[in-house]
Every structure is written in structure tokens, then in C-alpha cells.
Image 1: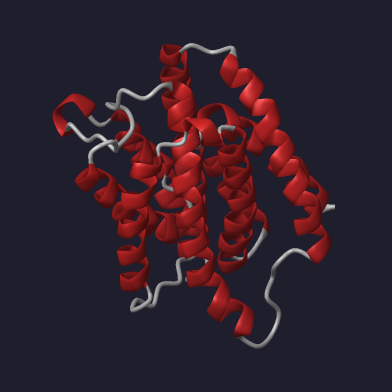
Image 2: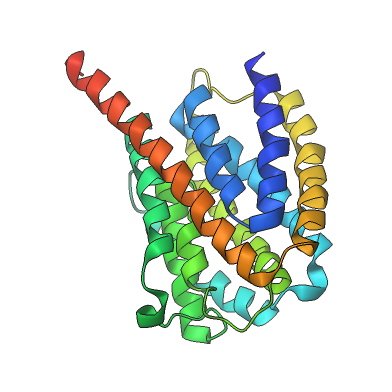
Amino acid sequence: MIHLALLATVLVTATISGVFGMAGGLMLMGALTLALPVAAAMVTHGAVQIVSNGWRGVLHRQHIRWGIVGFYALGSAVAGGALALIAYAPSKAWVYLLLGLIPALAWLPKATLRLDAARAPHAFACGLGVTGLNVAAGVAGPLLDIFFIRTALTRHQIVATKAATQVLSHLAKIVFYGAPFLIASGTTGLPPLWFFLAAAPLAMLGGVLGGRVLDSMTDRSFLNWTRWIVTGLGGLYLVQAAQLFWMSNASGG
């Protein structure tokens, strides 16, 4: 039953991501962390998001800025290499804490940061930072957004280019959590194969539905809704983190 509920969440969150480019991933990561062990949640989230982002990139491929993606890939590769040297295994409480804090990035004063993904050094830094945070917390949408908020790109170019970059970051996350996790003996905690086979078309359908909503929005409403949605999710995750830390302390864990 839990897997069916998660499939419904995949469709809903993929649709949201199809509209805003990131809020759905934040929502899905929270749901998976609630239902699965942390490593399994990271791997499952990465697999679903690769399909969701990849399909969204295909749908809007004519809007992708490949120069940005190229420099982002370089930064992502450096981050992936560095992460390979680190032993990191967060608890659910820490994952929720990070998920709750990440939306605060959406409120940073963009005018003073002056970050622009269209500039090569900034695209490289974006790949470095976003991939690192993606591995640590499972998502990094608000950080990614900081590099796109000041660009002269349209909402379609933002969503399409973000989608292409996130395929790389989620792939790094799967490698970080997946390879050691799947090789290890014992129960993996991952959903059954049929879940992934069903999740793929649902993620693709969500991208189509979200794209239709995106077409009806203005660039201003797109940016405003993104900020408030991720902030609301962040508040919920901070509450969840507080509950988990309290329960851990109460039990003496």
C-alpha cells in the first residue's frame, strides 16, 4: 500500500516540478524519507528525478542552454570526485533538518549576490555547490534557483536548463548512495522493481501536465509561486526534524 501511495506522490510532484522546476523534488524527497531508509530514499529519489528531469528536458529541449549545462557538468564532476572521498550517512532527522533549511536560500538577497548561471564561472560554481548539497540533503533546488534568478532567460529556458543540470546531480547522488548500498549485504530497503517501472511513466506524465500549466503562467508569477511553495515545505520539514530529534533524545538514542 505504501508503494502505491508513493507512486501517487511521484505523479503529483513530477507535475509540480514540471511547473516550477524544483518544488516537486523537495516534496518527493520528504515523502520518500518518511517511508524508506535514508539511503534507499536517496537512491529512489535520484532514479525518479532523473526520469522526471530528463523527460522535462526532452519536452523543452529547444529551450536548453547547453553552454550552461557544460560548465555545470564540470563543477558537478569536481564535486562528485571530492564526495567519493567522504564517508557520509545522515539520519532521517538530519535529512529533514537540511530539507527544512534549504528553502531559506530562496530568500537570500539576489541583488547583492549577483550570481548568473549564464556566466561560465558561475555555472561551474553552481554545479559544484548544487551537486554537493544534492548528495547531502537529497535536493538542492533553492540553491540552484539562486544562480538562475538574475539571468535574462525565460521561464521555459530556466525550467529546461535546470532539468538538464539536475540529471547530472541526481546521477551523482545515485552513485554516492547506490553503489555501496546495493553491494552491501542484507536488505536494501529499496522499493520493488515494479515500483520503478511504474514510476517512470508517471514522472513523464507529470512533466507533460506541468508543462501545460507552465505555458499559462507569467514569468513573474512563476518566480513568486516557486518561492512561497518551497518556503511552506521547509517549515513542515523543520517541524518533522524537531519531532525526530526530540524522540531520539527522549529514547536516549
